Length: 482
Image (cartoon, rainbow, N blue to C red; front, side, top):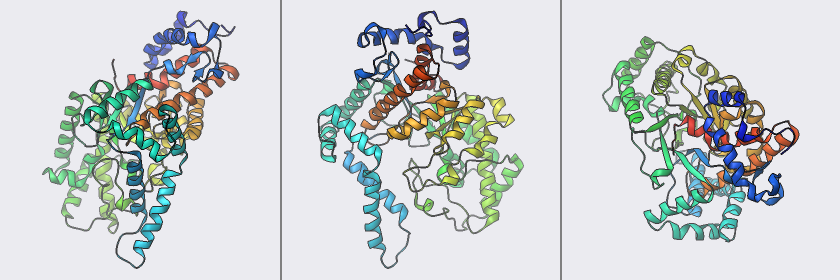
């Protein structure tokens, strides 16, 4: 044992009290066991980065259970088909609507560019090499498809495939975002003992959502929202997600109930006035899930302002309701890859006034800003360092190992480890889930070893951080047992 190391078996009273305050006592109790399991691969307890294992000092991160804090439904499809569909979706977003000379040629050129964008990304290179290593196939579409094809022939085969990936990478549970805005578990082929679920609530701010249910007053709208959120919580929902950054800014005003009622009546009276989704390419974007984004009134500033007032009131109401139900609010904030993600809509800085609102603080609502607010990860590091109710994850960017290294360094450099979570944002072939977990372990092994070798951390410190980030934080925040 190094001279400055603390004995993980006899953790000090100070550390235990600190852990209790952070909700991560369970991680501390497993630290000594994890070190014991790692010992055979590290003779005499020494650091062994040369072993090829993801070693954080003396801790083999392969021994640390992973919880994936955010992912979407995955399906029975080949990687070649999944990537081609993504390229076609991106091309469709970038080509202007309508009939005009040269449109077909522009679509063909844009589709070719979109394929190169999707297939040439660094995440694709590392991902295919990961599959090649695990299955001893070429790092090509043909090689990858040869792995997936025999494993998607039936529901039972696909479920077994997912379980094999989870077992290979030590993934104990995933937090699955339901595709539908329903208060019930999603239909999925993920083994039922390996996932918990969240649902989307930003759909409830759509004017058409209220109209289709015959809701004509703000009191009726919030009553129905409360009913659905309460039913979701009873049925096991672990969090409520806001994806509005695909079509509007994240900042909110604080309208009164009377102002929201007046806004709703103004909107209902304008029924039939043309709506647009502003601006292009948002108009043709599909958010993760079954519906396009909320239409906007571009030509009438008064109607546009009324819609924002109506939405802002409902978002704040749902944030307070989530606190009452003791479920976190999950907020998308990131710009990368997808052509419809605008930097102004995804900027997390306007959320500061939401996080510090007195009513939100009284409700004790906790927020998870997924995807680290990229490229504002330094802002998120500042937020998690100063705001007790704000957390973040590295989902999606865990597929980009080069950038993941910068991301973890920024977040952990300023924020406490109990505010940061691993996630994948997987949404097609389930190998993505395993690849993201592999990247997080490899990246954290390098970063935490550096903290021990150069920045004064002990083995106990880096053990704690590894357990927090890879699983303990998600376990506590999303109330995961087993």
